[in-house]
Image (cartoon, rainbow, N blue to C red; front, side, top):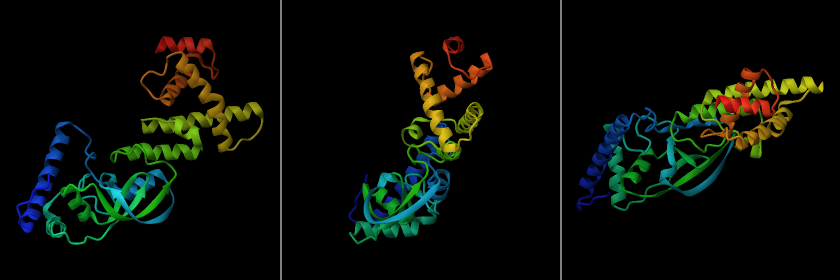
Length: 279
């Protein structure tokens, strides 16, 4: 909590020391909980956009944004942690100067951020964000540039999540689903997106052989989802074979087991019975 002694200079110095202590304690707590090393690292903007696939951007102008939505940086990932607490004394002088200005009620210019989904990444104003957190503020003024991406940013918590997003983006380039179909196909293991992509392409190849006609990726993706994925997932739900996995994870598992056990690509009661025994 913000503490006032009546001496703004001393209070600003205490603000910085308190923020540094919290950052050190947070690192220690993460180590004791055996959390991944990247949990408290500021998300790097360029890695996020590369993983999601940038389509374009547009300037939104001056907005009021929530501080807890500011999770990343364009180029200052080492000076602050995920909650923008300073990671060293290197930023102390400038940090305390801004804290002093805030405590004296002086005007502080808006920060500049990029918006990706509901997340914001600081281009200019890292120290101002850090001070705002330390003083217990909930919102900050910012000039916002919105970045439109191929894959939604939803679900990103730390840097390791970018691997899943990157594989998902590549999967959707190979299997261009849209709308409800895109939202329904979800995997937690990034490598499984590569396996599912291979599976769908093989399914599409067999379909083209059966029909004696060429189908582009969009047509294959649409027909796979409508004629294969949805009916199979429906059967798996009825047979209670989904369990605590996502429906897509259950589908991928049984599709591989089906072929390994029975050497067939068809779905019928015999297949479901054999899979139930393997559960």
